[in-house]
Length: 341
Image (cartoon, rainbow, N blue to C red):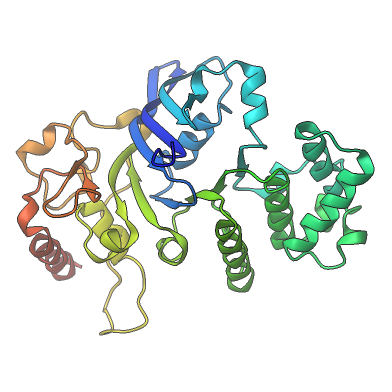
């Protein structure tokens, strides 16, 4: 149906069996992506961003990994699909740009061969036509002299060019959903801007996107909605403007306050989030962020539900703080931090 989300993830959990017992990396995560929408997934390293998306595509195949919940894509539960049908979905309907383009590309095959191989795996075309399409894709993503570079190996490409090649491969079959895992990591500012422009063009063509990143600046430029993750859980989610201009969770406050600003008064010291990110095997039963939160109280020993605040039913957060005075509490906590730094 037109009003249904393209991707609807419900109560997704990922657990790893270890010698010390099961470790939960993703704990009851729920979110959705509408057709043509860009969802920005943010959080510190270890928040469960990449693991959750790998679980969505059923790429966690180790026998010691346990995945539960529902992942509905166009009404079909991907976690219940037979392997043959799931292989048809990957690459053709849902594509993923992995975090490290060097390890995402096979070093012993040319870049063009790898793009053409994906095209031939999902469509009935000849080798010549697949190669010609690979050349067009490399040219579309800004690879100079694509006719000759299609025969180059991954090590002959720069980091930015490899990232473009991986994006070209992901787009080779015109997927309805593109999952991009830190596509601008380790790229210089100029190349990063070019990659973001490319992703905007892809979204303008109708592709929905899930953008995984720790860079709040990137999210502010491209995302329609934002999902903030911490400890494998959703801490806050909502429209980009609501999350950036009226954040409700203390963890989101910390992420936004730690971003350097060009305008405004000069700070003596850039605010930081106290402590270290929670380890997957040490997540408390209550609020996962409570050990690092300056406003924690007794009720934080219980796990808060992800609920809407007053006024906007699309802006959700998982926090026990009173909903009517979050702004005042945010600046009060900030003053405490500045006074003790």
